[in-house]
Length: 271
Image 1: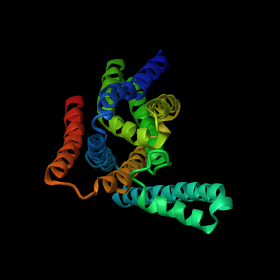
Image 2 (image 1 turned 120 degrees about the vertical axis):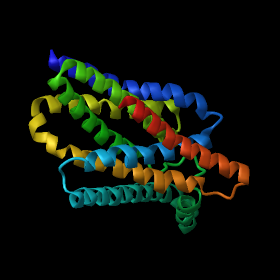
Image 3 (image 1 turned 180 degrees about the horizontal axis):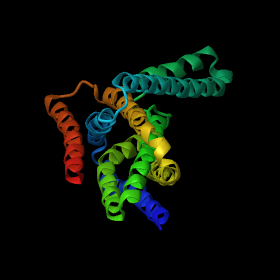
Image 4 (image 1 turned 60 degrees about the vertical axis):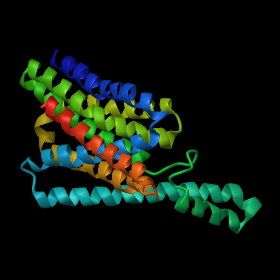
């Protein structure tokens, strides 16, 4: 009975939050794409710095070890990003090489260097980092929900609802990123939903091995934080660094702060 409750709670929190975020964000994407990028950057940074990292550092894990995991995560996602760009540039070179020779190769690299924020058909950085971070975070959420259900059924329900609530804001940011990398709303929704199902996996693993995995939860949280920080600072923020008028700049800052405020508000209400 407890395992069934854990499965229901984790699926509701992991996948339900994605669909709720989609209902809220996709309705605004058509008219406010650039604003949603600002909102996404604020939401991801706030989730990492105001929720995940504080929760990790409140544990008994050593600060030096946690910072080492954070650094390793940032380097990992940087390397993953470079590998993705190299792979795409390599394929582009082979496709165009027979027609354009060396010029095609130079054009591929020029496109990555200068067209990163404007070509919606080319693979963009950040997508896989978001999915990896979501999966790690979802796994940790599953363990948290499982531990709550094993302590008390009502506490488990409350925890699942709280997880669903605080996941919605940063899933809105994730969907914006994946919408750009995937090209369609449906593909973005499917990918983030699949990442959300990892919550159920974390719940099942937590149910059977909770005593052994509990000590590793802070490291899961820090690893997830590293992906959100990398995506916000390496992918989203650079897209917003354009020469704009005062009104457009003020709008960017306002939506960035709105993303931070949204996560702060929802997290406070959830707690």
